Image 1 (cartoon, rainbow, N blue to C red):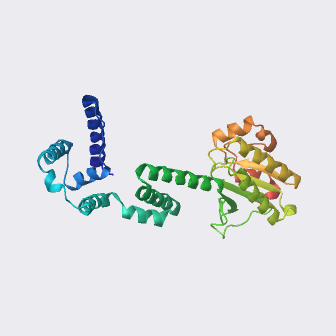
Image 2 (cartoon, helix red, strand yellow):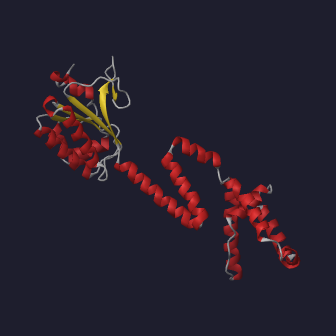
Image 3 (cartoon, rainbow, N blue to C red):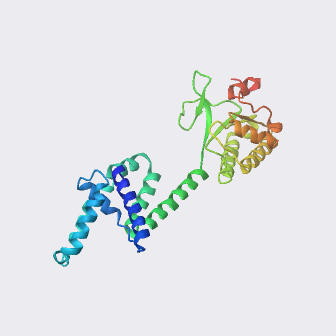
Length: 280
């Protein structure tokens, strides 16, 4: 919606409220299509409202006979012609190309407004957006890290198969906040990777929290479960890259006492340096 359309719509609302207060009348707000018609007609200032009101009054007083038998299809054509400009087809195409979930939310909003009305359509789109957010949050990508060849940097081995695995080490990075809706999924992914790699050969599990800006208590409970499982299998758990607020939470929970240093200087390289047997 353009700035002009919003200005006209807001002005209409203020004017009708003022009129209702003065005349003690029940108002009926015009549709958004009327603002669109005004914009297409070349309206540039709120003076359009005054002129439109005068013209409407004259029509009601003297010209109703001319419009009495006007086919509804003509009125519908005027509305459709005006409202067509409010549908941004290029934006929908861009959403389809860039982000299918966002396109789905936009498509639901469009269909909901056309089928059920503006308010119901917007509420339906909001509900779908919340569901999409929950699905995304409940299934965060867990990146298992490998060394970038010839460097001391580490990145996702699924995206970069040429990365070198770290012998005896499983380093993983959950890419998203760890919450009650996804903590168990992350735990299952790590345990599955641990089992597939052969527990007898894995001596160190490193949890990189650099991409997790927030943890809740369910996530700290998950980390405790992971620590217990890793220790049960004869390995050690280390935590690196935690943000300040996350470190504070882990310390209050006593988790830092279990895994050792979780300070801001703790990195994968530092952990490997402090574990000589892990060096290549």
